[in-house]
Image (cartoon, rainbow, N blue to C red; front, side, top):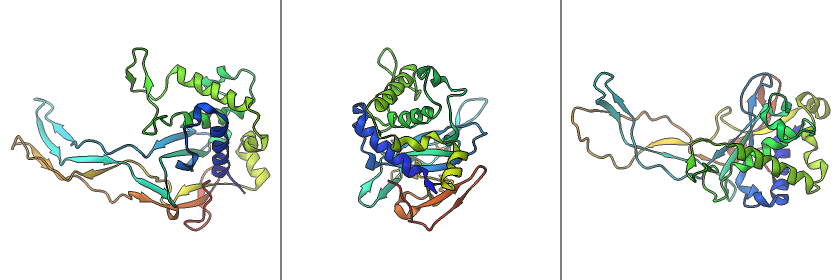
Length: 272
């Protein structure tokens, strides 16, 4: 069977080597993994997840009286942190997830990016999505790329018209660099075509599938005194979340049209 996340990882490595604008990315610190997503359902094809954001400043949740607007309750102070993902001696800074089989069946149909590729074959839409997620990686190596407004201020949105235009130019630059067609050949097949040719589609996933490493809340070490004694402090609900991940937290799953299933034991994976 074809390991789809392995193929994407190899393609990412080739893209970064061939496109100078993306040369700041260290592929060893980017982990590609698979999530389930039906082809007939709406939703993202892929997502870039950042793991290198620093802890937030302490904060708390609060509740107000609807009539007076006065705070009546608040939670304990907490901070939000990023989980640690480490494969061997390498710390992972970014995760890029691909929804299978939805990503495999992506084309330019109903896509606003088709205007950038007027004569391109449908599979180029998938290449665009891969480059799109790589372009989200911040050049300064911390967080997701910031989108600036015309006045220089930071936009709260993750995309802009210029973002899509730049991604398309990077895709064209990669194809113009003369890459080995075998590196991206797998993108030419939809999910049914991959299954027919390789006998199935598998990919690296996290052992707690469909869960994966995400930012989590932790009780702050310092709990300031309550200024208003009439405000009740609610204990912070603590969920036992995993905060560290290694290769033993990965496994390989087979993805089918309507479901997925674990294929091998924990730790038996090929992520790069």
